[in-house]
Length: 276
Image 1: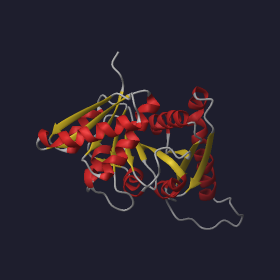
Image 2: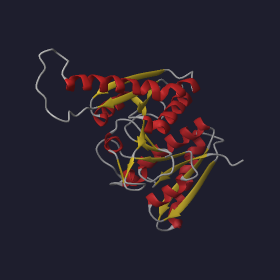
Image 3: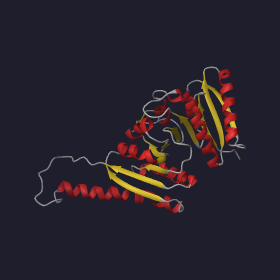
Image 4: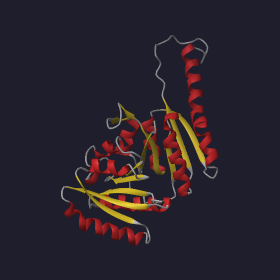
């Protein structure tokens, strides 16, 4: 039986070292191996960096199986290819407001739009395991794979799972105010829609609660922008899990929530593509 493995992309920078530490901890949690990948124009350039990073992993986690690989070509292409057989792909960013090193410019968004499995983008300045909650951004039933990952992540960490469901309602046509409060057709529609949205987490998570009875779950539904609400909630989370909603087919573009969090989250982000 082939050992499952976590893939981490590196470029020899301090940013990549943080991603390496996260990836090695994630591999230990899963009982998986670690595969360290360096995409370079010339494979010979990668040797010293890969040896140093393998040594760091061995010092932190003696006995963790580590494989290093130099891949010619672009970072995105190499990691998309590697992600096909990985349980998790990990990359790093500098932190707030900017991207550098491995994820300079739009590379993180391109990866999230193309990788075959979950992508962990190490953001913020959290230590690898600080005892904080796992945060799940839940939009609808389309986030079933992200929800399943979030429950598993909370279980692996022994952490509470906080589920945030956000919704907004745009009134199609203006209407005259009602003489009786909260009884106009528009207000009644809004109230029905609000009740339906409040029920989304309960119905979407029922099966997962049964499968993971040891996970403490807190759900909250807010009438606000999903991107804005989740971004604020990441200040107090160990990691945030979101669905990678791909618009126009694989490899095109992501939705606004993923776009915002990959660039501005206060904690690491896991983007989980749907299976559909």
